[in-house]
Length: 261
Image 1 (cartoon, rainbow, N blue to C red):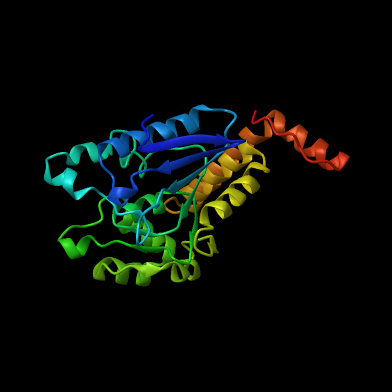
Image 2: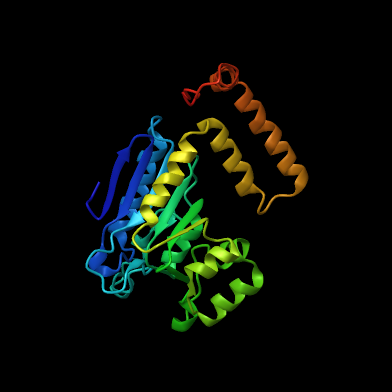
């Protein structure tokens, strides 16, 4: 994997870093391919249960998590490389995943950068972060999920204002509206995201994956479909070895030793 997207593991957590600070972490073909490869590694490794996605903002006067699509790449005819067949934009926004990804935002996430954030499962942001879909200011539209994911996350009225004006909104407002799960001081978003990811790894992984699947489906499926999906996922979890371990650990008053099977 290229250095433009870095991948490392810390226990049960995979840390994925967008590493193009000199270009405001804008998405070009290399970043898209690297991010898709990182998610592939996360999904394929049974010893890793959660991902944390962050961005290198070193040397930036005004920190930027991701400025979206690299307009230079688009202008030079390389727009197709910004998408992958399985992941869509940045190799991520439409990528089917089993494992949750927590995104740590410590700067501006705009346009496609905001759409990457919206495609994650949980958002931890510092007070110097901000979010926006600026496409209308350039006679474009947010084509990587932002037009339907942002209303789901913060409500139609607030999302409509952000989308039609193209103006960013603060991390505090994002927290108040429900997009951001945890709000931190500047420079602390990644550490807090790691704490959150660690808490997730303390839960049974199969139950986490199944619960995530149903929660995501709730945004677009009817109640009957969701009931059937919940019952199916419940049955799968109940057939796993970790069910007995969870019950035994509770009875013995000890921490469970999850195996993920």
